[in-house]
Image (tube, rainbow, N blue to C red; front, side, top):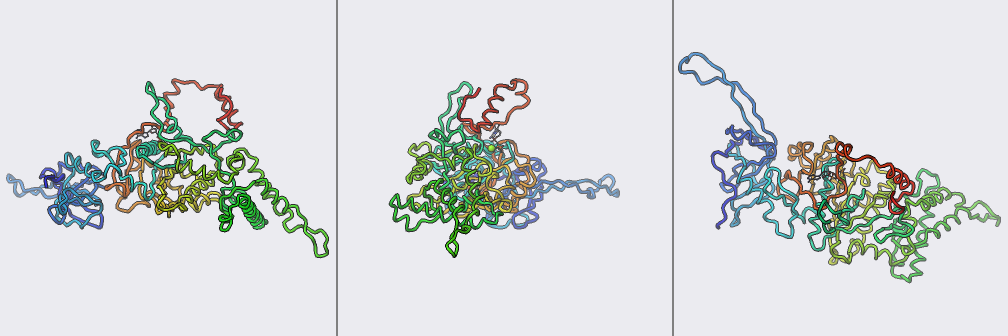
Length: 596
Ligand SMILES: Nc1ncnc2c1ncn2[C@@H]1O[C@H](COP(=O)(O)OP(=O)(O)OP(=O)(O)O)[C@@H](O)[C@H]1O
Ligand SMILES: [Mg+2]
């Protein structure tokens, strides 16, 4: 064995001794006063373990110096006078995070999470700094082979060591990126996508709420430099301006893809006394219409087992005709005369709500899909575009939801995720390839369950199911939000990795505290103080919770923080653009019309 231990301590790096231990924390009486100022919160300490080869590694949570009065050594010149002197009591509290062994079996330099033993009173403690720190941080990503490395930036406590997460673990059991507005979440997402793009067959669908990631599909040229190559393909949920001649990248989610509950959550008014009748007639007719499509397509095998929720096309006009027939048809009385029909007048409000939605161009992506979207084979083609595109280098798909009306946004994201998930669910297990949904601005469509309305509950149902079961089918979520306190706890608590950027709001910090083990409370206290682009990386993708500085992505999302003060000195507002914007607002579409 030629490899030397990476941690070796001498007397000057000895901090002091263990004086108190509880399950995960140790109190160290610092005897070496010179080291105390160098031991900041977040710095690492090593505590001699049971054997000479073992050190427990802890992270400093608190550093204190208390002054105490004591009787001074008697002065030989005046031995009878008792003098008092002030002496410092230096202490450091650390939380135990892992165990390092200089050699384990025959393997040198092993570090694992978790303390293998409890530290013993009076054991020596050392501060890990300088060469020790560099070598130790280098050790953290060392065991990862090339295929697993997800390099995110560098450690704040040692700028020379790359912060590398285990890419498999990061995605395996869902991850979350949390941080106040402008803390650098979208840039972190871009960086992760950039890293994923380097994998041959990355498969990621990004829910882009503000069109910020369009730059990844069409990178702009930067000052003096040519545009970098794209790393994603861009799609958009068709907006009002895309309906007449839909561009190739416009996505439609026709009404017939929605299951019964999703459709009813949008159309049915549950407070209406006729709501149960309306729901039951709707269900009956949709089922019949789907059945007649299957008949026409000669899909006898599907017909044997399909349900009202199966995504099978039917014409909305046919559904409306059937509902209107119910709503107007007269009944025949016992004596053969005409009486009030069983459903007569009971469906009027339901029909008008459905028609209002169907007429509104903002909902066109759902109710005014192009002719082809009524073909039986259309759905499979769409899903192939998203899950198995022919252009291998475009495995990352950015879907722009910015023109989707906010009242149906949860249903739309929910249907979208559910469909892809269901396809993966029903695929032969050995043919599945894993994919990730990046849910940016998750607070907009994954709210806390108690606050959710009928529409939002549908999205929650789809996403919570993925959060709970997705791991088994190779589907993972990367939840990104500035308001963790407004996001479903079920989803957040299923996340195993967290990249937490600056977080200033109390409520949000409390949520994060509750999601983490108690032992990390001290580490999390620093969240409001993080710089832009700085984050705590916690979870099983990294051996130690660490503060890292994220690398800036090669392609910046379109979300730059504006320099108000500078721009006010440089650029006058443009009246013509304001006029054009008013027209765009009326048109509800940026796509068509010329911009003045
Ligand atoms: N790693 C980084 N290093 C330096 N600057 C960064 C870094 N990441 C982000 N920034 C800067 O911070 C600003 C905001 O970043 P970003 O758009 O990623 O924030 P955000 O957290 O997504 O905000 P919001 O919640 O409002 O979407 C940008 O102007 C960007 O230039
Ligand atoms: Mg953002």
